Amino acid sequence: MKNSLNEFSLKVNLFLENEKKAKIIQESIEPELNSVKETRSKTSIKVNKNVLSLIIEAKDKTALRASMNLYLRLILASSNAFF
Image (cartoon, rainbow, N blue to C red; front, top):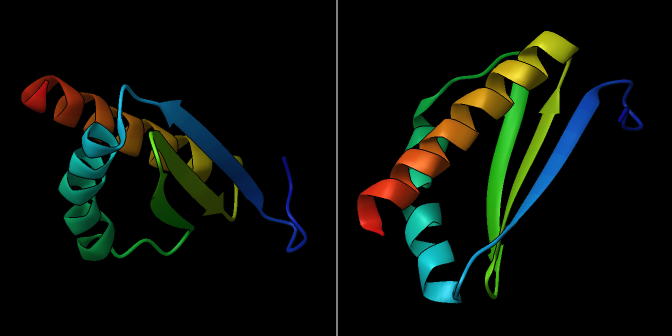
């Protein structure tokens, strides 16, 4: 999907068992979001009740796919580690 800036964007909503699990995963991923200096993409993660949302905006499809793979793998690893 293209957004208004002629960039590519993706939103993934992950429905978890409860809000506590969603917040634990969010807190484990946020340090990575703050430490990675991405020049071709921007990623954010939000929690609303039991829904964890991953939002990625990128300049090109390759950057979008790379960011998606990175953060989905981090979410999976976090989920496996804590639950």
